[in-house]
Picture 1: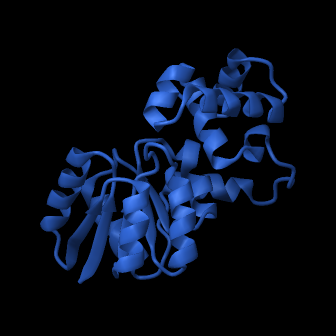
Picture 2: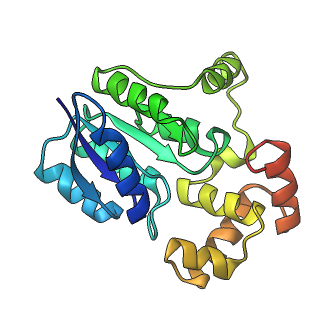
Length: 210
């Protein structure tokens, strides 16, 4: 039996995932967590075979939670299940220790396949992500501008490029507007840009946002 922890801040998402897995043989949802703190606490206190982890927790990014989980349980398979397209976060998640990355638009059959695969010790990536990773092999090691950002800065950059205001981002991430403004200033400095329009143009050109 594959014991699964579902970590997502949306109750309906957790219930929907639980229902899908309830109908799956040899997979059991044994626990749920609604935020990063609860996820880390439960992983430290209990034994799971797979963690289904959202990437957009309020106040703390899923990438940060993932890194901490892997520091406590290096061998625990963590499958990222996100509303964000692969282009935005998949590579960062895999580099941080994720065993796989799926969007929430994926078919239930693909989710089940991914859970079984990572529970068996393998990685799960889609064909499109595999092509992206393969295309990066052999490229010069010099980082692209957005690759020098921290995970939180990258998250804020994508949200700015998607058209959200500082206030909206602050509310979504459960942070102060001042903190978001500080992140924005650092992002512009690190990427050698002057304004949101330049960030947006860059993000669209690189396929980081629609």
